[in-house]
Image (cartoon, rainbow, N blue to C red; front, side, top):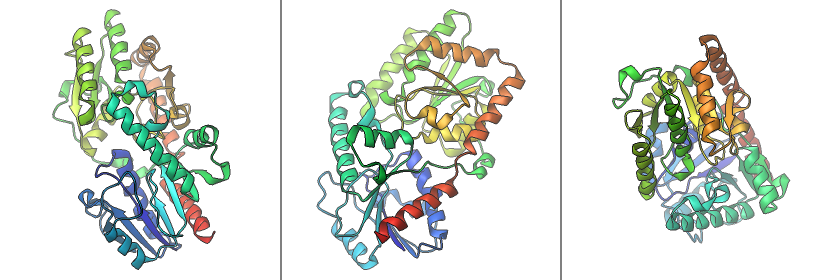
Length: 378
C-alpha cells in the first residue's frame, strides 16, 4: 500500500502535531503493509531534518495551505501523479481534492468547532469560522475520518450528523522511552523554585484558560497560602491582548513575585518542568485530545484539570477535576496537593504514569494502518 501523507498548513505547526509526526512516521515506515510513503509538508517546516531519513519515505514540499483549494499546487500534483498513491491521508482538518483516490482526514483542532467564540477578538473569530468551514468540508468529502478522542467523534456525529461508521477514534499514544528523556532547568526558572511551583503549559491564548489559575492563586494568597506558578508557552502574535490581560491580573492581584512567564521552552526544559513541578494544571477550555496532558502523565505529574472536553476522557481517574472558571474549586484542589503527604502524592504520580501507559503509539499506528488499508481497498 502506498500512502500520501499530506500536512497542509500555512507554515506553522503545533507542538502536539509535531510529536504526532515524530512518533507516527517511523512506525508507518516500519510497517510491512506499507510499501512507500510520500510525506508532503510546507518546505519551511523541514520535517525531514527532525525525523531523519526513513526507509520508504519520500519528502516533498506541499506548499502553503490555500483557503479555497482546487487541488494540490502544481509541484505537489506532479509528485502525487508520479507516486500514484493508493490512499491520501490528510493529517490535518483540510480537504485536498485529488482525482478519485480515496481520502482519510484527521481532526486535531477543536477550538474552531467547540470553543465559545466570544473569548477571541473579532479577527480570530472570523478565522475560526473559516477553519470550521474547512473542517466541515474535509469531513464531508473524506471517505473516512480519524477522531483523536471520543469527544471529537461524538461532536461530529451528534452535532454535524456525520455517519458513525465513517468516524474512527484513534487516540494519540504514549512512548515509555519518553520517561528517560534528558532534562534541563529553564534559565528563567530559579533554582530555589525546584519542586515548589505549579505548572501550566501551552500556547498563550484565551482557550488556555490561564485566568483560572490566577484567580485561584489570589484566593490562596488571601488565606495565607501563596503558591508559585510557571507558565510555559509561546504567545501567539494575534493574542498579545490576552497576555497583557493576564499580566494586568497578576499585577492587580499582587502576584508579580509568584508567577513566572517562561516563554517557549525546549523539549528538555519542558521535561524538567514536568519532573520538578508540584503539580501540573490543565486549565484549557477545549482540547481535541491534549498532548500536553499525555506528556504530564507520562512523566509522573500530580495532575489537576478542568473538566472541559475531552480532558476527563484522557486523564481518567488520575487527575483531580474542577469546573472551569470555578476558582474556588481549583484553589481547593491545589490545597489538597499542598496538604497531601509524600505517600499520597507518590500514589498520584504512579497513577498518572499508569494512565499514560493505557495509550500506545504502536496501537495508534496499527489502527491507522488498518483504517488506511480498508479505505484504499474500498
